Length: 294
Length: 163
Image 1 (spheres, chains in turn blue, purple):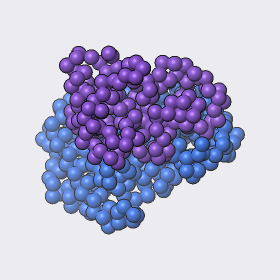
Image 2: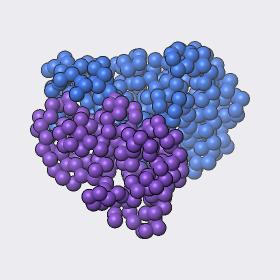
Image 3: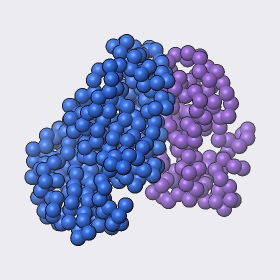
Image 4: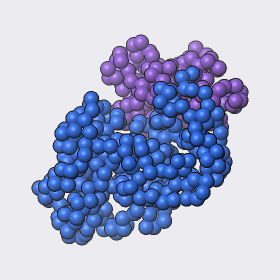
């Protein structure tokens, strides 16, 4: 046995879980455990107690609310991947989910776990930031809503309050009929951690003019970032390749990228712009082929 | 902690520390050593088992998290004592293993694929085993084995697991 010794509790409600977390500084939440258990095995995490929230029924759901889709934190990634609501209402999340880990980890890993964990290369945090999702967390004192764009402070560091649990994530649903998504990633091997990933969602009107656009970059720096300036430049255009390229290169010039063993910061910056461009063009083409009304 | 585990259609009660992984519990408490311990931190896929019919890494689960789930290990795939399943047999025939260390995980990942997708494309097969490392074969014969098993099951009009 490699991890340190700890207690294990499995509360049946969110409030019970919050009380358990509030009562013990060394307690940590476990849901799918696909990141936490390796950290335990390497003793990088040394909790006194694990609070297992994976079977709290109130945390496992995918709900279509018209303007948005609400996903419960312990919804398994593989469940979201096969879900009809996700497939039809959240095309970008649907496109990103197959890139999350491997099949074997997606069967255990949860949507909320990935959000709370905040790995800079995580696909689900990237989609949340790109689509400007809202993250709801609860602790013993009540619940708080946090904008995904303000949630990530650093690599695996988030604004999630101490002792709080992510309960659900609300992804906005674009109402335009002609909406498409694009997702691209560069890694050493398929499904390894991304050196750089890019996600884009595009809506077009009947004449092929862009009415809405969101693009984000993950893996390149300490946190996923949304390139808001690209939306400002390109909405109203027809998304020709050269104008997309110019807008993306300009907007990503100030994005901070990291240097490590795998890739230099300059390489990451270059790849980020290229992938963002590809993601937008893929989203454009998908939107152009999409039916006019949902 | 006492945990009731359902492994290969048999219920067993084990007494484990919460920090004991499901992998260690299967091997040490239940004697099911066909599940191999490779990297023990979720990278290599050697410890892949089925949890409710879906592949999962047993080194990335605690034994105490596994109650109430149906677990299947490589020992659970054999149709009878000393016999091989169609998929296992296909691995032998195409030489889909050399040292054999990754094989149980490969076979369980492939088993889950064929249960869901009886007519997999090559891309489906590659994706299904993409989380399992093999350092001997170069994967070519593993892909061949899975395709052969799919073909045999189809021509015999069998679902995987049926005999």
